[in-house]
Image (cartoon, rainbow, N blue to C red; front, side, top):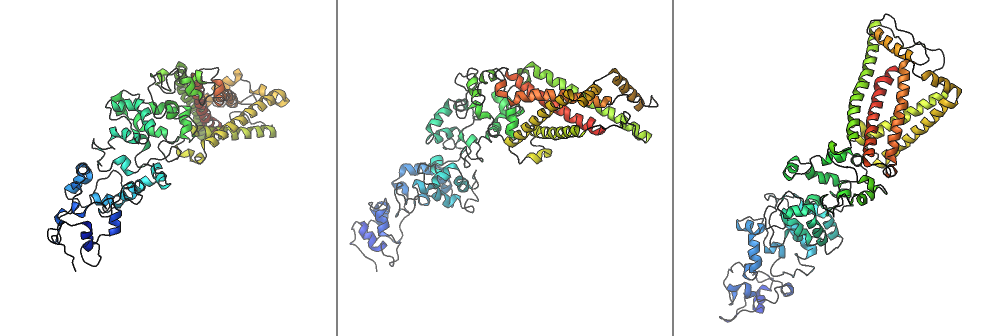
Length: 574
């Protein structure tokens, strides 16, 4: 049955609960204990249900609007994306109750049981945003925002019980949630540093002083903000290998902007910064996975990036010795006189000369070798028989000792060539065999092979000078004018001018002599340039930076020449 109060009697909460506190009387049930413990527990029911001031009240009560009391919040909400969606009848739009809970059980946000308590915010937002069916018609920039958030440094901190971990409302707002394209949004690009500053105050202050922060403040909308480097729902700790700010990913992150020709032309930035870095030893080693080698942030800084003209900048000329000295102890002053980036014209003139020299010499040398061997092969193919360059000797060509030397040479040469080119051509398919090895392992193999090659060279010099056979061989390997005559006669025979080849009168043919002395020359050049690079910190105490660039350039081109010579010249004769 229903309870009635005298007509004209103003209803109290007890009057209302006399009916609505009963589960078997029909009207909407209100749990008296839950209501009393809610934030509305001390408020009269009729303050919200104003058309129920007298009992009995009308059968159907009007809907209650939270805006009756919460006018400011309601005004803000109605302008938000949720409010506007609700205004046009979108059923999936979040309302007050979706976030705060039912008004009869609504708790203070500080209450651990409240849906809008910090530790519950993510779960509350997930009621809608983790429901793919409900979100199917909504244009979200994140397909699975709650799933991606859980894996972030913020999500992991929240899961670990960190009460200060950033949650949805810290970045997106509460009643004032707007899309990222809205200038009023907390996640509108120019507003992002201010949003992040709520937690990361010191970092934000540093960023504001940086070249990126000052550019953003000046209205350069392309200037990077926090999320451009750290990500949005993908923010991970810099120690996490999957983070965009991990040492192994910094260069790729920076190159997102600094490889854009359009952006560089608009802002007057250098176009080839990534290429010049990748062409350096730092860049090549980084491509091979070396996490200790210098990356963009190692020199330019993180949040405190400043132009080189600023005396506070880590790349200001006065500060370069300290910056470079972080890795290269004692070599900082020398490094500060060189260039890591820059057009070829900004490098030392010797680098240009060496490059032009090798780009001329390598094709010429290898081309002549190929032509020589092609003519020799063509002559043999035409005549149908093999004619050696020199008469075959009946004596032993290589003793056991010399065969061991040759075997060690083959092994160390192959290891040096393969592990050396792995730095420059790490992405090529023919380098996949070494891909599982770390940069540290690759460098170790290369340097141990180099040591083996050097020790072999020292032993070979001793063998050729100190042993009787070695002195005989060395004498036989010395170039003579007769070798020039034999070379000319051979070519005349190969092209058909001479009917018979001139016989060789020495133990070694001109081809073998050329190859031997080329090996000696190559070993000296590779040994010197390689040593300068291995002991770069010591080298830079005595030589300027351009000598290191020159050593690396010569080392590379000599390696290319040596490998092509082996393929075109040595293997044909073998």
